[in-house]
Length: 605
Image 1: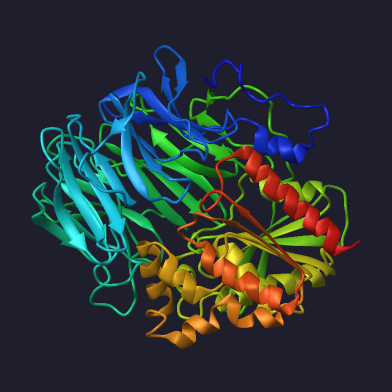
Image 2: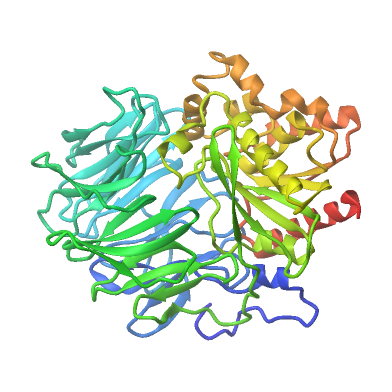
């Protein structure tokens, strides 16, 4: 199937509502491209109704579907020579599986690294020689292991630790491997180690030691030049994410000290002479080019909104995936054109987002508001809470909130403490009283929404997915008078059971957030667990859950639901055959339709 001719793209039915069109309209990710074969690209599209990987030969314009699985595929990597497409093969969304590969031009899939047993993925870096791969794995039994695989031999383990870690990058000539690790036990703040292919250490960088403030580091990539030992990394030394260049051979750190107020990320231009800067500030983002010789910072043209991915091409142009709350996403170029435009039905626009700042117990809280055009309040209002928790809502296109607006609801999204994009202190405030801290911020914004006349206090819905689903259930129990209804997707519902059933990397994160295991700090797990407060829930509750979810496993949700059943509480549960969400468009539409129907039946008005 190709997304270039539109032959298999969905067509709009006359009675299809706008909200459904937004889910069905074909969309594409930012194309990745092969370092040594830049005409060969890989992207994700929902053109067939399921998100799958697609190969694109830019020299001929040919596109073809690479993967075809019932529950979709989004994890894929092009080898630097463009010869192979690697993709991760799990079972029905459980995130536990093996890497497979397929020739770029098509052909049978094969096991990419024979000899490695199934695991959760923990990073992948492919060598330019087409024969080398660095593969990160995570299992409950072994913790994290990293393996060097070559075509002429069995994979060799070069790293092992119980705590979470991952492959950062492989240098251009294959002589150095960057590893992010949390051997110090803080899963929110990584340290860095650079090793040779035999696993021996070359250099270490650890900002978690020697200070009273926890600081993290991240790998952004080795310089794209043979023999160049510069590693681009992200740091938090000035209270936000910023890039610096670390020469791992000499130990010299070149701090860029960019005069930008928000979080800053970066990647190399293909010749290594400059950096592509992505600046995120107050729910919007913009692009810059930073010349490493002249230290000049040049802003690149992008519309107001959010850039969710960007890459510099060999000709110096930059391609980026852009959207706003009102405008659907497109892959654009700094030359002004659209790079990849899927055919078929077009996604309808939505309404712009409005910014609100509310004083809260931990500082000013940023909230994003959408409401039907030309309608005054008080309105039935949906508090749509983002997941993560280390994530944030932005001025970007989202079909879910737009569906609620189409049905007459106002939508409020809150970047509570723990959210990224507002500095290290805001993100790191989320410790030990998790859930309760975020709900304090959500309550402050709720009070503003009611007092301002936007929200009808008798028709308030708390909803979210993943961590947002967790906050929904916790909020219904700890703030029972505040909410008229709750809609929780793939939530944490029983924190102790969730801890014991979830994937190992998330156990490490929970130990960091709560300060230990359920056996070590039982009072914290109890205080932050929705099941502790289930008997106080008064509002009708709707829960949707993937039966193969390794992040918010089904058993702990079933425990919570049984408690609701024992009380005779008003609730409905929808279980579907996938993992932490669905990549199937029909399934996603079904879930939204069920939520809208539940609200119609139970909200009133």
